[in-house]
Amino acid sequence: MAAISNNDARKNAMVRLLCGQEVTPSEETGDFDNDLDKIIAHLSSSIENICDELAMVLNSEDRKLSFYGPYLGRAMLELGMTCLVARIDPFRVLVMKGKQVQTNYDLGKPHSSSMKWQGDVVDEDVNDLWSDKSLKNPTRALLGRYQTELTLISAAEKMIDDLEESIVGEKYDLLTGRDAVGHIGEIKSKTNRCFSSFSKGIHQELLVPIDSLLDRDTVVGLLNDAFYVLSTLGLIMSHVPYAYNNCNVDDCQQMYSVVEDIEVQEHAA
Image (tube, rainbow, N blue to C red; front, side, top):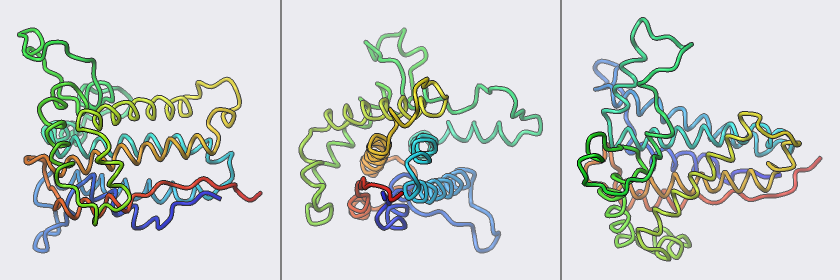
């Protein structure tokens, strides 16, 4: 049986790393102070639900894990990235929510305002960041070239410099074993692999038995990679000075230490 050890601790740590400090409604009005807090509260709740569903699916038989694991893994990946986009580029999610609350919003058609993996999370490389052609419509993707060069690398450098072995524990060597550029490169590589692999399980592309490629070991490995990507990006985000709703850096290191790998064990028939 594969199970998430101490799921509540992992869940709470992931929510804080991705969403920052907890946002709560005003005691006077019963509502949130602003739309961005409403969005973050909604995303926090959604991530908690996904973590709970994952805990149950990991305790189920292999067939169910092969079928539902990719759905939940991609949902976690997309929700987590949306949280990070919301905190580093609030305008993006405010526009998306603004469109969705319109009375003529149609679920049955695509919308230009919708979050898109290609364009909002990843994007094509940019050869010359400062050419007039590139700057006419610079990509704002979270893992795009501009955010990488202007924000993520310097934040990752600060993350490495600020690490306390007494707080992050056995993950200290993992985090100090790469430089900032190496961390961002690893995150991008694992992000692309997870998204592509989860998607194959969702879109029913596979014409061979799904559990022959997305078996228990493979799905758990992909889920661990997704948790690694999101938790590490969350830790890096705590060093972005203008990121919305940042938690204390030491608190983020403590939460990062809680996000342990899911262990793979044989499921009892």
